[in-house]
Length: 598
Image 1 (cartoon, rainbow, N blue to C red):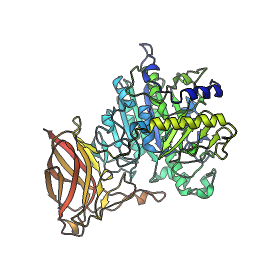
Image 2 (cartoon, rainbow, N blue to C red):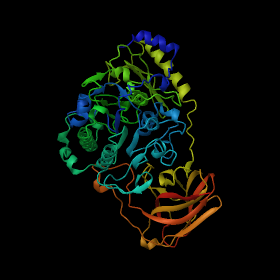
Image 3 (cartoon, rainbow, N blue to C red):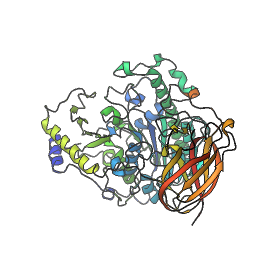
Image 4 (cartoon, rainbow, N blue to C red):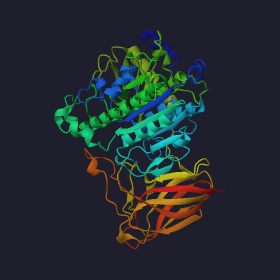
């Protein structure tokens, strides 16, 4: 099905960075053919090896496996080493540095606004669009999912969450709400309602689950099977590095995902949608721990095979051949062009795509042009072709013979090694040339949205104010014990007007009475802390393995008043004027709701 490798190398030396435009590859189905529904399920920190269909006998995932049995399994599918870059590549069909994504928190996850998302493409074609889970490509509009093509959003926009059981401060279309039960079950409930509501029209349901990302929390029902080490028959290739408690929790979380995938399949069948619905399952990076992963080198954060290889299953009953497999390399960058073509959507892409449509492979194409897929994170770039991986240190590995990347074969195939090194250099010169890692201001007051959420994740504290954890995403500020210290957000007010400011805080009764001021430019409002809120830290009681991330609290909303904001960039500051107790307060989040525009 492929050209010879030698011919491929000669072609790549002449044109190392082939790019396609979406409009060139798409075809339109017959007028009578209804556009397929699309359900895309993305797991968080689940490795390729965390499925029974990958050969892992430690767990059972019959519902996820059934997507491959009833559809197609891609044997060599690649994503990015970490969360937000993979999401950016899936959404846009382009490598994440092109979209300005350079981190996983504090603004590094923001997807540039000149990037077009798959949700925007499908929405323009008449699809109802909904996302339910972890977004992780920007919180404030116009980065928010409701501003990037999704009609419905329920979940959270940051990189991780601190409590998986009925947590506070989730959101539904910008309104803060409380979750209902275990988060993965809850997200699935919302998706099932969305599917049923839109059963008569084409829909795109995106379920970016937040497990098995830590903290390692899972209901007892799923944990009981894994309550001792005897459940682990397969171990990491260096077993002394494996934390079996963490492994068992991760596998229990995956089995919970599998149960929810089964619920989705049942709903699709019950609504008689199976023959007109594409269901996709994949993960966003390698495993978040040292556990069995088929002997591959690398885990989450690594550009080696184990850090970027993902399962990828796609089911479309009676259209995709059941039980088929694709050996050709593919990746998250291919999903936008593939799904657009499968939906019969013709449009000119706003940006040149790195991905290609995989539909010819699903149709049994006799010829397929070999190519390179690039993996990049924190200055490291590796390159994969059909047979080899060039590591970040320019060592070359024969992936068919050496899945664990133990032996450099550069001297054995010098033509291959040279071509891949030159391809890597050319890719870095082009793609990273305009890769801007400078912090961007957080937008406030997009004209099409009344809400702006400013979490402490996106703030800076001075003096002795400290973050509750070094991982910012679900953190809060504490130790505000000096009136000279302050909290600030680097913002850009997009629409001048009046904004109601609501602060989510904690403060014990003995420390009540502090007066605080919120200021931007020449405007300032003041408020006094008069109602106690002294909740305990949450999370440890549900952790199956000690966490790295912050514990959380049930923070209480306090209305500060209405502040008039002028358009423009600057520092939005929260400072203390008086502190009669031992501290001012602890702070988790500032909500700004525009009440009228100038």
